[in-house]
Length: 137
Image (cartoon, rainbow, N blue to C red):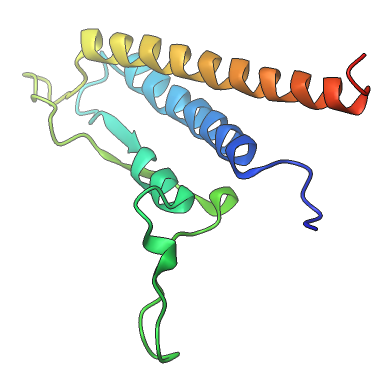
């Protein structure tokens, strides 16, 4: 039996919440610098890395025949790291700034909704654990 109290789904939701918090910080930074000349908006992606860690496409079933081969399969969900880079989709303004305030505000709202959804799912899982631990009382 595993010593981990939480399943892969709970760990993935917790990791998703951490990444969404980081995305909030990146997006907020873009919004705060919307009037800063020369500022280049940042973008953050973590969904692909999280998907690989969760093995959504079955890649963890692969194996290597030699230790010299590249490692295959997913990484631990807890070790999932985001990619933060300058947003290549940003149009450069006259002052060299690439922040699109409307897109950033929209991204901030979407991220908040996704964060709250993950939080609600974790709360439901914890309520189910509490119910099971209390013998259904």
